[in-house]
Amino acid sequence: MNYREYIKEGKERLYKAGQGEQAAQLLMVELCRHKGINLYLDMEEPIDESIRVDYLEAIHEMEKGKPLSYVLGYESFYGYDFMVNEDVLIPRPETEELVGLVLSLYDEHFADRDHVDVFDVATGSGAIGITLNLEERKMDVIASDISSKAIDVAYQNNEKLDGHVQFIVGDMLEPFIDRNLHCDICVCNPPYIPSHEPMEHSVVDYEPHVALFGGEDGLKFYRELFEKADQVLRPQSFLAFEIGYDQREALSALAKSYFPDAKIQVHKDMSGKDRMLTIERGF
Image (tube, rainbow, N blue to C red; front, side, top):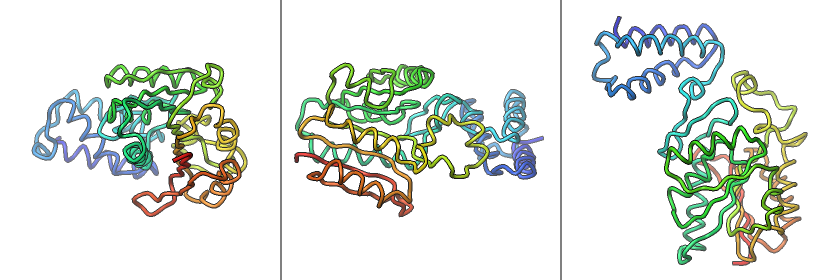
C-alpha cells in the first residue's frame, strides 16, 4: 500500500472513533518530514516500513483520544518544535499571538535598553519564555511553574533550542517574591477555564488539569497575580496575559481595580476574539 492509502485508512479510523480525521494526514506529514521524505511528491509510492509501523501505532493511540502533539511528542510554536508530554499543556496558536504582542510592546518601550528582565509565570512547556528569549536576546527570562514535572520539560526545551532561560518552581509570583526578584515585563498564560465548563474529552483526559482550570469563574489566578504584582514590577513595566474569549469585561474591571492609573487594553486575535490583556504602567 502507498502513503495515500494509509492516510485514507487513518482518516476513516479516526472518523469512526469520533476524532478529528484531518490529524491522520498531519501525522503522516510529520513522520515523513523526519525521514526526509516529501509526502506530497511521494504520495503514490509504497510506504516506508518504519513509517508504516509508527503511523499505525500512532493512529491507534489517537483513536482513544490522545492528541496528535502528545503522540508525536512535540508541537510547533512560533517556528520552533517544543517537546510536550502529558505534564504540560499543548501550546496553542493564540498563544503565539501573545508572544508577538509582547515583542511589539518591548519594541515600543524598551528597544533602547541593553537588557530587560522578563518573568514568564506558569510557563508549562516553556513555549512563551523560551520563544521570547530566542526572538530577542536582550530579554533575560526567568520562568516559573508550580509543577516540577512541567519545569523539567521546559528545561529540556531550553537546552534543545539553545535558549538562555532560568527556571524556578513555585506558585505564580511566590518564587519571585521569595527571591526578591523584579521585572520589566511579566507575561502569563494562566489556567483560565471555569471549573464547571464542559471540555473535549481529548483535553480533559490527557492535558494537565492544573494548567487548565481557574476556579469557579476562571479568574482565580489573575486575582492572585494582580494582588501581588506590585511586589515584583518595576515602576515602568507592563504585564501581558492570555485570556478567555468571554472574559473581556470581567478582567478589564478587575485589572482597573488593581491598576487604576495604568493603560489597560484587551486585544483581539486573528479570529477577532478577545484573547489578550495588557497592563502598561508608568510610561
